[in-house]
Image (tube, rainbow, N blue to C red; front, side, top):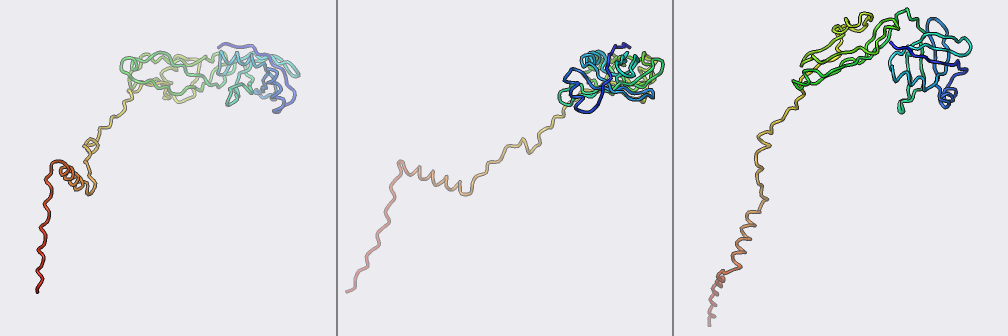
Length: 244
C-alpha cells in the first residue's frame, strides 16, 4: 500500500472560531490520537489532505511530521474525514497513531470489475453487494481495494467473501464469509395487465327520458311542414230551432 508524506502543526486552542479561522487560511483542524498517548490538536494543509484522499479515499497510511511542542515523526492512518453535508468540503480529520509491525482493523473498498456473461448473453442484471469490508492486517499490507471479477457470472450466480479470500492471504476478513459481493439476477419484466371483459365492452347508449317521444314529435312536425294536406275543419253544430 502506498504511503503519503503529511506535514502538520500543533494548534493552540479549539472551538468553532479557531476551526473557522484555519479554514479561511487554507488549513484544516485535525486530531491525533492512539497508542495510549494523549490526543493532540493539529492543523493540516487542506490541499495536502485532498491530494491524499483523491489517490486513496479509504484508510490512507501517512508518514506524519508534527511541528510544535511534543512533535516529531510517526506513522498514522486517516481514520475519519468529516465533510460539509451540502458542499462536501472537508471540515475535520481524525488521525490515529499506528505501528507498521502491528495489525490494525480497517475498512477496504470493494471494486467490481468486468461485465458478467449473464448480462451480455442472458440480459440479466448485475447487483452489487456490500461496498466495504472489515479486515485485520498490517498497515503495509492494506490493499487499495478488494477486487471482484464478475466476468464469468451467469444468472443466479454470486460471488461471496469466501470466493475471494484466498487471493488475499495476508488479510483476515472479519465479515461473514457468506456475505455477497456481487450477483446476477434475471431480467426484470413488467407484468402486462390484460383488459377485463367489462373494460372492452362497448358502452351502452342511454337515452334521456322522453327523448324518443320528443324525437317523434319533431319528426312529425317536420313532415307536416312540407306537402302535407290541410286539416279538415270540424263540422259545425246544427243550430237548435227556436220553438215558437
